[in-house]
Image (cartoon, rainbow, N blue to C red; front, side, top):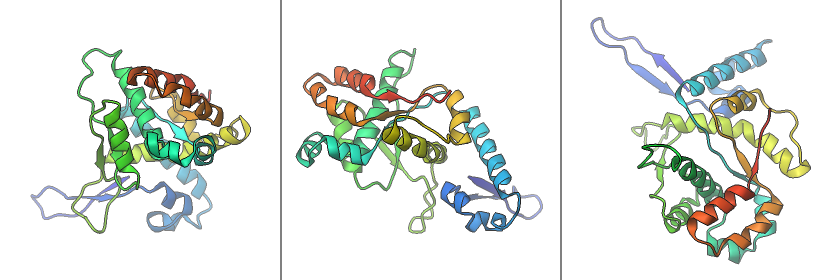
Length: 238
């Protein structure tokens, strides 16, 4: 994410202009990063920028939570009728699992009440996430924009979602490797840095975890939450 200071008349506060940070633009060296494309040191520039962004995240975040689901594994483990009945498409399942981690952690913290669960707006299955979380006695999730929108330019993006998006983008490749081969190679530096701080660990529901999940669905919400947490493979890089 970038904020630029624009010129203003003397005696007036300078205006700040917001620019989205799209990790895909950085990877492709387009738009904001098009001038880097043919520079011999473009990779080192990108690495320095990502380290700076990681440093900003570490200064403002005390805990991280995450959950990943490989869509092919999900479809292989559950029939379409089963997924529809329990609202277990990839997005609501991963989102609800991450929210469950937050709730379990919050129960161990003094004075940790009235937590807001914020997700980026725009996913087609957001209604299923709302319904799943309501069934499990969560407050309704809040959906906010993570990026600037041409249709609604007055809506200010929620910067914290961009931090989450940065981590999720670089986390996906090694997670998919774990799902396919059982190990992770070529871990991006962003993941290695953010693994150490803030505390917490991402997780991934593998195919055999999903196959075991049916056995947990008849228990009360909290037990279900703990069962899912136990099933989910913790991903530790160091």
